Length: 409
Image (tube, rainbow, N blue to C red; front, side, top):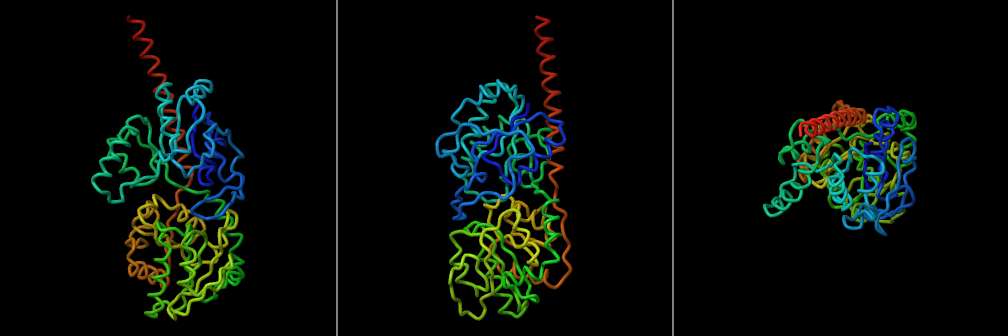
């Protein structure tokens, strides 16, 4: 059996588990460390309590493991096991254990337990080789990850930067499997198609003029996401009369929410925060608050393009996948992990260079946008099945060699 260990039911991972179960090629079970997002859960960065409005536990086998009291996906030390994974893997006849990164203590515990049990370790993480690092941090990271990667048998890479990171640690090509980050493309495509006839109505709902060029920011209002760069770029476009009618649509919440509102002329605010701005170059903006999975397509239909201006902390940026699946063009910072695969040179700007972002927006607003086809979860499921079959062949070969060795002695 393949055991899949992950922090909590994540809306982007669940379609993989469901498709894997539907195909029936691999016996598996998903082991969750917490039920974050299933029950109402507090997200510190969002500053909101929420639960997903889609069923994240249906259509595949899963169970909740025992973790320390107060375990949360956001804490490395708190998210650790309070049971013997060694015993659980033995009892379930686990042959391969798949972990989703190294950001919580439980993943490191799991690698130790797998090695003690003779179970293969698989890894699918997010980190890439894009961010510059000081020498001291570089050395520490290589020491820690060097041990971890040395105990991993198979690596699923989500993109070019992620693959290069593994290769820089000596991971060989025959250990690597393509598993691109993807969302449920069909669901987003269908949701957008259903809402598209209501586009004018949605724009009126959010206070977006019909003739405005609407730029969407979707995510947490936190420093690494750099949402203020969208405001600054819009100010340049207005000041230079390049796109006079720019309208910003902010979906999300977070600690920078008040500052963002203060830099804009707010036309609609679902959270009713009264902030006034008299700067004539301040862009008009609307704030929807947090939109759940079945609601987010309203923004993808109402706006004209998405901007992801994040810094190197954005190891991928699945909001870009969602937008592309909804037929929305995207402009992405070159610090984001998804830029190489999903944006390309024409839709990528230098992180923190507001003039570069403004120029990309100007080009997009005055030309026909070419859309990149986002990857599908099928590619990841195909790789999981291939890895499982190869793992089974390796196990058979090992048992045969061990038997032959025993026979000759």
